[in-house]
Image (cartoon, rainbow, N blue to C red; front, side):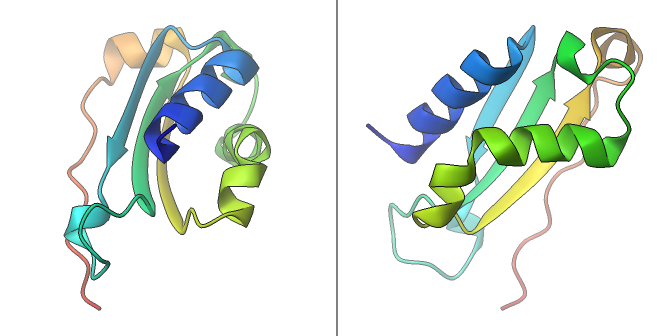
Length: 99
């Protein structure tokens, strides 16, 4: 199973998102072709209600602890409640790696 599929499955199980995008951005970085080391996650979940940004990111990091321990290098997170997503559904493009 690909890392992208694992991320999708684990976040779905842990946070029951109403919207989830898992984008492999490894090609924007200096890694071998077909790498799965850098991802962007856009996630909307009721589980984020009442949580500040740090708490939301902790929830995502906890769900993906095994992936970070096994080669996931970077994760850009954009976390929203369903109400926030209705208002702010634009997510900025990720910059290219400078390294």
